[in-house]
Structure formats: C-alpha cells, structure tokens
Image 1 (tube, rainbow, N blue to C red):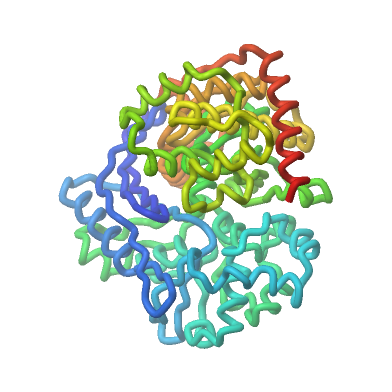
Image 2: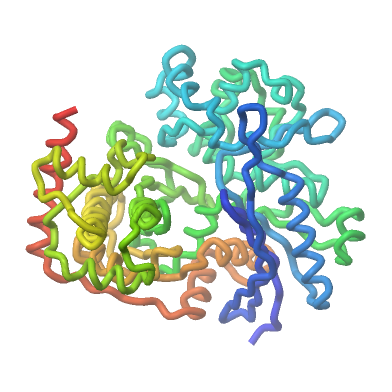
Length: 496
C-alpha cells in the first residue's frame, strides 16, 4: 500500500461552497468536509454580483484549518459553476466584483446577438454549445453594448476558478473545461475562437494560457503562505467546471456508459473522444463541453428535481419526511398524468403545482389533485424524459451504451433510479453522491503521479464506495407509457 497523500479541494456552487480534504492511499479515497459556507449573490444598482473576495477569504480559512492539523497537503484544486468571469486591470487589481449569470442584462442579449452579429447556426458549428442566455458570449456582448467600465478597462479576463487560482498563486491561466462552457471555445482546436472573441470586442491575448486538467498553475504566493501557515503548496488546474470534475468521478469500468448527474438540474450525456457537432445535435440542442484527458462531455441539460423542490415549498399538507412522501406517491396508479419536465411553463412559474395541473388539463389528462399524485406525475415524467434523451444519446454515440451511471445528490433517490432503469431498459448504477469533490481530488492525484489515468481514477473511486444496482423491470408498460408521453408532448407543442 502506498503512503497516504492529502489533497485539498475547493468546490464552489452557485449557492454554497465547501473545502474538502481528500486522503488517498493508492487503493481507496476518503473525503472529509473541512468548511462549508454560503455563496451569496450581491444585488446592487439593478445588477447581481458574486463576492469574489468573500470566496477567497473562505478558501484561506479552509487552508488555515488544514495547516493547524499539521497535515501536509500535496496540492490544491478549485472547481466552480460555469460561464462567469472576472475582469482584471493592467495594475493587477480586480476591477469590480464579477457579474453573476443571473444578472438581468443578459435576458435579451442572446437573441440580439444571434440576430445582428453571428447567426445561431454559425455559433453552434464553431462551439457545439447549447444556447443559454447567460453563456459568457452573451454576457460579454451585453457588457460591450452597455459600455461597461470594467469590460472597457480589462487587461485580463479570468473564468471563476482561474481567478481564484490567480489570487492564490499570482499566475493567470485559462483552464480548458471551464472555458468550454463560455460558448467561445472550438472543441476541435481546443482554443478560444478569434472570430467570436472579436465579435464582442476582445482578443485572445486578454485570456490566460490554455491549460488542461492536471497541469500546474503555480504555487501559493508568499502572502498566502504567511496568511495560512502553509508552505509553497502547488495549485493544480483540475477540471475547473464542476460538472467536468463530477463526470471524471463516474466509476465506470469502460467507455460503454452514459451518465446522469442528478440534482436540482439533471445533466445526461456520454464521454467521447471527439466533439459531436452536426445538424442532429444542433436540432436537439446538445452541448459539447470539455472533459479530462482531452475528452468531450456530450450532454443535454434536463430539468431535474427542481419540479419537486418547488412543489414542496408550496405544499402545506404534504409530509416533510421524504420517505413518507415517496411511499404515498408509490400508491398512486402509474402514468395517469404525464408532463414534459423541460416545457417552458415549468422554468420559473409563480406556482409549480398549478403549472403542472394546467399542463395536464391542456393535454386532456387526469389533473393531479394532491401532493401524492403530483409527486407520482413528476417521477414518472422525469424517467420518461430521461428515456427520450437516453435514446438520443444511443442514436448519436459511436459505441453501445450498456450502463447508466447516476451521480450526485439524486443518486440517493432509489425510486427514481428504479424508474429510470425501467424506462431506459438499462442497468443503472447509483453513486457517488460526492462526485465533484472526488473528481477534483483525483485529477490532483494524477498530477502528483499517484494515479495513472482516468480509468485508474475510476477504479479507485469504485473501490471506495458501494454502488447501488437497479435492473430494469416492466418493459412493456414503460414502453407503452413512453409512446403516450411523446404524443402528449407533441399535442402540447402543437397547441402553442
């Protein structure tokens, strides 16, 4: 058995962040949460910002905690949500707290850009990224149009994990997986596209050197060493996009798998050696994001447990105990009410349960009357939507998909996992729940030479946890329900 090594992961989400200590002995890995903290949006002057210095402070606090334990950490890695960025001036100072992707300035920018600057098909043909109004391309365009002073005076543009790594090391880089979320990167050349940059008034020189997961960013500055009590610890570019780190932790045995990162939102995809950019992927709005070891994460965003989370906030008579809620839902007849979870009416309605009832009424179905019927409707519908996207993936993949790995918080939902196995007709393996932190730490371990490659990483992760296996059942009933689901979705679309 190899000597233990310790790795420090910073995992930042759009609502909260954590610092995690990972302990690896060559055959298994253990995680310990060091600190947890909120990531608060700051609303000021009609705009929304991230408090970059508060996040920096929390990273320093976590490093101080580890230093007090007299644990010698091998390296540090940072992952965050995608698309957002920081402007730095020529005096090496942050020009302003970074805008958050929720900022209303982007709401109309995408349509305006695609109509007046570069066409939708041209942008997709270059980037292979699905269209979301908050993508970096459209944020930058909106800032250019408004005459944003930070934009005009920026010497450097750093994506969020790269900005925090710079604050720790003094070195500016552009990490590949986080850059791939921007809709500015060509996955075939693995570089930012000059035409798209010029279209928003920027040049490639504004961005740091492109680095890939596992490369060294730098070591802690003397200032950070003094504040934390640590030495010149290396900071490694992990998969800076949190989903990239999560997919790196899928405990697959070979490439014949799909993954479902399940939580408030669901991301279903496959790992490919080359980007898939064609008329079919454009029509179905699939995205090509960067993965580790030069891979591409070919995936689609799906509305996940957002539906149920919103309903639970609205219900006054539903049980708070999740297991009781599930037990009540199971008693309801299957497939009596079905919705398209990705219909626009569920994006952010004033009342989610009323939106679900309205959808069912419009499509001539049984209108769910209470929390149990609505919960059953959500679970049945999510599983059938997963089947639809899974079928798309199977059609476009260059290999047979034999297993579906469910990772993230949703991997604990046994009922939905079983429904997903039934709907797709595929074996489902559930776990880990802590995929992002595991992937972050494993990339650091690869950089240290402790693991060889992605498959070694996945082997060790599989050794370290008990995966739950779900075999498909009731194929005939689920296939019939899927045909009905497609008719309902088509009917709703035609009525609009």
